[in-house]
Length: 270
Image (spheres, rainbow, N blue to C red):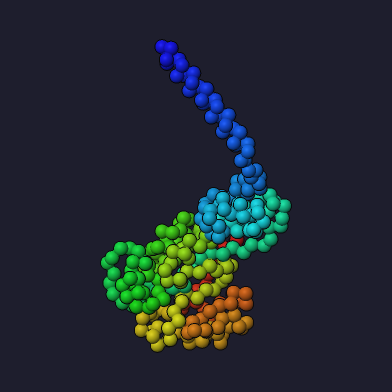
């Protein structure tokens, strides 16, 4: 019995000593954390999507507190969060334009010619290992196996009839789909942009006609029709200068392939 009591006493003393040592070490090596980091982190939505360009919300909060990042980089939180972060940091939030993803391909089933029938893993990268472009004959086409949709945390990306499409109202602009697309055909565009070119093919018109019924054939009718010079054909592809575009839709009206798409623009809520 005495041995047991002695052992308990020794353990108690050792515990007290170790606790004291740890307390002293904590005081010696303590590093004060900028309270701005905590406040900014609490203001963020916590999606950890990486759309801000930093490794999660913690990384972004630290960058803002250090003065290395502006307050308006949280694409999920939008303007309300930007305003909160700016208030915490005592700076101006500035103007922020909402950006959304857009798939520059209209090659759905039935209009995009097949190079071969693919029956392997439902993964765009895996499909590209066969022929280096995927099952569709156009080398610039959407493969349609859903890597982008799986990468999206906000249910804003879906594959419909063999091609990816974006739900503009759900898209937060995190760019996860952009990073996931091996064809590099998903780009960020201004939410308020009223017309967009649904094609990324840089093949000549004759080649495009062979592989897709809706691909841009570089006919230049859109370029000639635009009253402000906002759309030009470059590298066999119609391209829009969003800063110049007035959204008149004349380019969409004259496009014989119907791949310049008018967008439904709703009231921007953030």
